Length: 297
Image 1 (tube, one colour):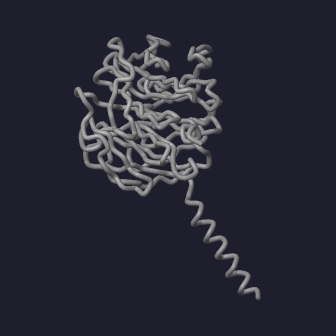
Image 2 (cartoon, one colour):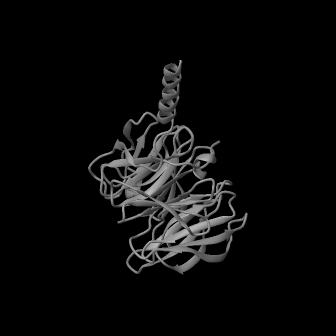
Image 3 (cartoon, rainbow, N blue to C red):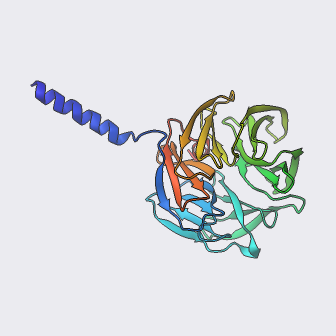
């Protein structure tokens, strides 16, 4: 009888381990090509497909479906455009930050038609983007040569509205759960800032969340607890930071040059990371649901 009980207990433990993979342990998800110089902008759509920019060469859009199969989704963007950040709205429309032609582009998921949604020639380059639940977009705008930047809102009429200029080198940007806080990081200065965010997209009450002594900052995303997951370019980790600016943990990656992160998977707790020095999308599981994933639920 005791022997039977232990067999039963072992089977329960084994099943639990199978259903709960090791948290915060990075592994390779999909090989997406040897060209990784511009590998960036991961985002997951309403169907669980992962999209990202510049596999194989600049100007392409890659896709890895929910079964892990990789394909080139867009072979070449028009007019020499090259994308960086990708975001999806609640209707499944894809938005691309086109840093070459100073655009935000959209791609219709049914016909794959590429359309200019917003354009402003005064931008340095739209880089990463965040999206509020009402569809308003926010874009970082770094000037890498001068280590400065700007921060923009793209309203639902497709118009760029300048929120702040003369910042540090703006890069990663994200809206917190509840749409009341906007986070922006500065790569060269290694700082993350928070702003209060109004319903109509205005920012106020700028304050420093955290500052790092070394290595760069790139893309970042929030979970539903309000924690930030930040790509630490050059350090090879995703830093998880609380809303109070406390470093909770660092997830060690195989690559040293992570550029961005997205949430997806069946429960919204799977993280996908693009790295510039490896041909693989990396992945790890976390305890919390991603904010971007929750927008689709």
